[in-house]
Length: 459
Ligand code: MN
Ligand code: MN
Image (cartoon, rainbow, N blue to C red; front, side):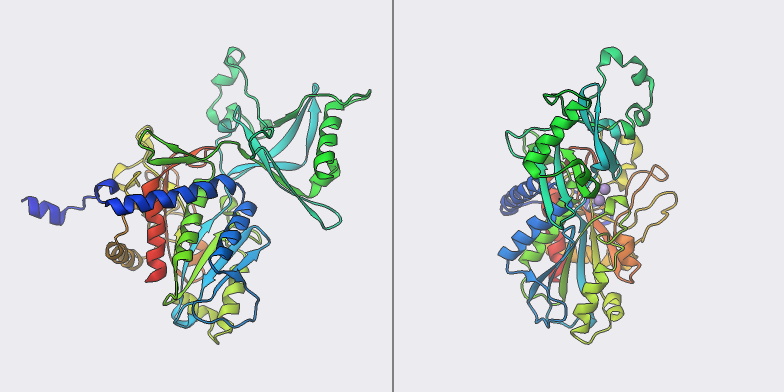
């Protein structure tokens, strides 16, 4: 009977019951590097810079369209400083397809409006327009830092980072004290804090002068001293407020990682580290770090942009291969995070189908909402292929779905890859508190996602 149970039942096991000591040590090394990436790369632009810096140490160089490449060559293509594509050329021609892993490096945040600065009752504020799906109440009464660029009329770009380094000032959106919040507390969580209410406190000392808006003048004068900018320069700026909280280990057993932007830099890092590991692969391996996933993958730096075609067409043309032939034989892991089952909120999940912390890389056959709407839905054959590959390569993994039927759902870049006629499946790290200013993942799942992507690259 016991044997029969063991053979016939599908019985996933906790990853820690399957991990040997050697892998436990590797997992710690891997996560230490990931944590410093996550701590330093707080926007898509910073992620691109960090990735290029690391890639150059690993022998990657910038690709020039038209150049001919040989097996083993390592290249990168920078899409406007906001998205990045890297490749290691394979021994086999692109006619046999490529192995692609695609993650995104943008995360939910508070973007400054184009005319953000105002003074109210002798306090100075920055107006914001939030980016991506957020629960607005989570962004008040928490420290924020400012990152981004100001594009000057001269063509010069000024980089701004305030609040990341110890000792630098930080910013905050204030909340109402409970003593006076009786009316606010009767509102729903969606209404308690509004989008137009997300205004960041940036200064309080008036300029020593007569006249109005003296605090605003003082703030502008500080910005002018530090960055040489005037109020009008905000018009062509991309400045964003992100949580000013350091990445850290979570739990007495230090088994988890807390931080801002795991979605989806945790998969971006897994792809990068896996690609760095690849030497002389059979098929060409491609790593995509996309922008704009959180707002629908539109725009020049999103996954719907033909920037990806440009690279693939160039690579294919240099081998006299038709791009569509390459696509139809390619395989893509859409590496994105998924919702982990949260025992504090079991009502939104169907426990059997949800990914769990420490059960490894989570594979989503489909995403979507209301009857799998808008999903790419990987074919059974693709899932079958991955099951075989991961079992062979010792990747701890699990099947996942995002919430109960009709509870909600979500999208990734998977469908935009699949629409190109590339076999694609979602796979990534389960996350607790996804899209919150402080998200939590398990170290084991981070490491296994890296191992899963590496297995695909090396197959
Ligand atoms: Mn994501
Ligand atoms: Mn997301």
